[in-house]
Amino acid sequence: MANVINNLFGGAKPASVIPDKSGDSDFADFAEGADPSPIPISPVTTTLAGAQPEKTVVPYTKWYNVHERHSLSEFKAEGFILAAITVVLVLHLFGARLNRSKAKKWIRAHASTLGSEFALVGFSGVPRALSDKSGDELTQALADSNAQKGDAILKEKSLFEFATYATGRVNVAFVDVKLTLVKRFNPFITLAENVIGFFWDSYAQPSDSVEATLYPFDGKEALTVPAMPGAAELRQNDKKSTFDGFVWAIVHKESMKQVRDERYDVSLTYTKDNNKLPQWLTVMTESAEITDALLTPELIKASESAGDLLEYLIVSDQPLDKPKTVEETNPRKRIFLKYRLPSDNNYEPLLPIFQYFLRMTDQLVQVAHFRPEVLRKVKSVRDEMIKGIKKASEQEKAEELAIEREKQRKAKRDAELAALDAKAQKKYLEKEREREAKRQTKKMTTRA
Image 1 (cartoon, rainbow, N blue to C red):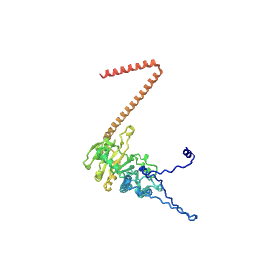
Image 2: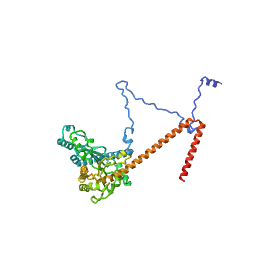
Image 3: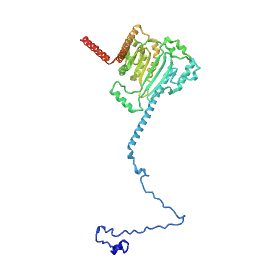
Image 4: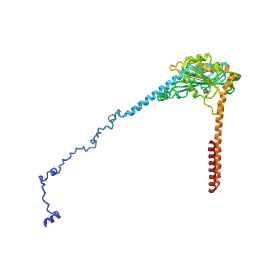
């Protein structure tokens, strides 16, 4: 009893129990408590002047060393992309420069010919400083102005299309010249066009070519020449610049089918070889008499000089595309020339055919006046085409009228049905079905 009371009120303390070390070997390490050694305290100077913070040491890490965290092998895709962009850019710049160089070489070879045949070459117009001059003085001043323009008379429309313009000549209103070059600035497109042209004959393979179109006055100087010094003299010769309308051409045999398919005017002609021409050229004409008048020794010599590069020389008064209305069949005389550019940029063999093209209107004005029998033959072909166009136009109008009448009939029927009640509508529809059945029976009886 005394021990219990002592325990409750903190009386006598129990004797300390000494743990048995041999009792459990698993807890032998915990038999004695840890005896930590005291942490030494470094002495600190109590003066303010002597108090200095300890230096912070930055631990070593790869975050600041990019060359250790990454390598060039991780940027292979970006390297290929940059290399491809560089190659495409270099090819683009080189191809564009090559096209410009080729166009400039062409205009330098033909500038003197254009300047000698026309008073004004290029798109810049007549300089204001020459507005007070006239006669021979104006002609000489325009020639000097054309010579000073140099390569500027050629206009760059795109990286593969260049153009020039000339006007101011007897019997000629103006002439348009267009250079179409291979898309050297984009070899992928060029390769695709060559592959398509190789497998499909309807698609021409790309090539460097010149297309020139000359528009004769044909007696319409008063409608074309503006009011300027010298214009009155041209108007006095209105009737002298006319010639008969027809279609005549010399065409390269390899291009003959394509030209006939693409151009409506040439489709009116028939093909006939001529012994006077080189073997690679043929004549497409509406009459043999026209060929005898136009196939001159100068033209034969110029064609031989041009060689295989000449595509065609066409004299035409008909549209290029097949007309759909009678108004589109109105004659409009033009002369067309097309030839391929030589790869060595030697234009000496091509200059004769280009000069003959520019002067051809002079010959047409002199000799292109044929017998009435020839003109009647030419006119008969045109009349047949006009009849076909009129017939097609009439059929189209008849179809439009039939559609309009059907719309009106249907609108009238719908209005009549809407005005009736349900019972009357039923009778109306029954009568309509009976009439349709009788009509079908009548058609079957007629066919039988």
